[in-house]
Amino acid sequence: MLDFEYAKALVEVVLDTTCSEKEREVRLECLTPIFGRANAYLKKGFLPNVVEAFFVRKMEGLPLVSTKQDMQDFLKVSTPHYFGGKFTVSNIPYYSEEEELLLWSETSLRGPLITAGYERYMELFKKILPQKAEQINF
Image 1 (tube, rainbow, N blue to C red):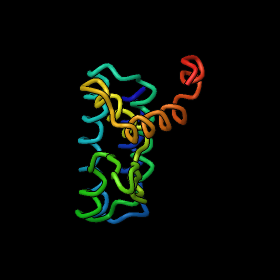
Image 2 (cartoon, rainbow, N blue to C red; image 1 turned 45 degrees about the vertical axis):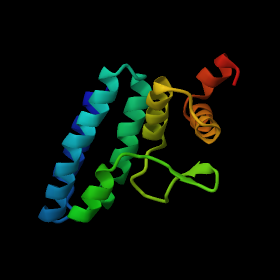
Image 3 (cartoon, rainbow, N blue to C red; image 1 turned 180 degrees about the vertical axis):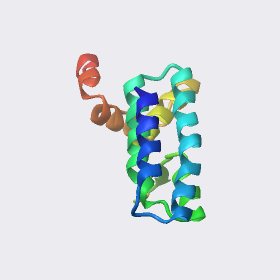
Image 4 (tube, one colour; image 1 turned 60 degrees about the horizontal axis):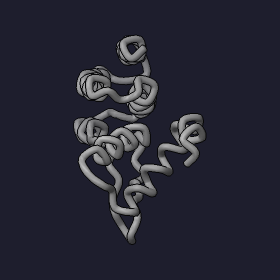
């Protein structure tokens, strides 16, 4: 399904008549790195539905990309900020909670999370995978 979502996004960018040629070029430059990142998550064994949700979420923000600076912001990994004893996210239109969940999963494999990290991880897990969270009984 990820390939389908990539093809869909590519067609939408190419056929978009509301943007300039420069905007189209910048948006096309965004597609390959995000698709590559999604494939890397799949190769690491993450749930395909979460990886696809990450890709789709990123593609929702693609029409907002019109400059090289926007592209740099779009391509940033969706990481939270630690402030006031908890993790928060900036109000960025390109942010993906699904990607943040993938990053928390990967981080948790490397060692125990601090309390604030664990709480954020569980918050995202329950939000993005409610049925799995119910099965696990979080």
